Image 1: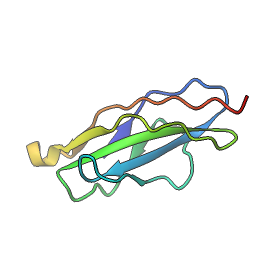
Image 2 (image 1 turned 120 degrees about the vertical axis):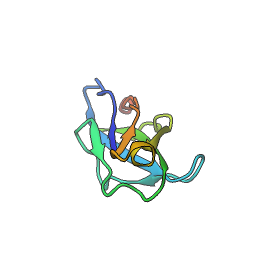
Image 3 (image 1 turned 60 degrees about the vertical axis):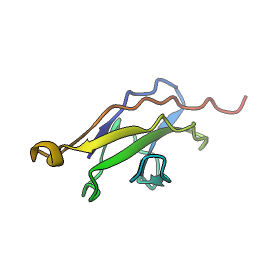
Length: 99
């Protein structure tokens, strides 16, 4: 699964954390061990399910994590057409630092 999201414009952005759930309403597992700078993530190998849900959060320079984005469902295109997988975009904003 290749997941993409819109960039955050906060000046203190440290990166993004990516999460995945294997069932609608299921528990999310963090896929990235630390914040990543990129606005995309390749979940490889793809989970052995027909659908997965992804969410992204932003982390600021002091380690504050934003709320996760709304879950974004992805469906295995392999199940539909034999071509791989796809996911919709997610958007997130970094939290502001302590005031």
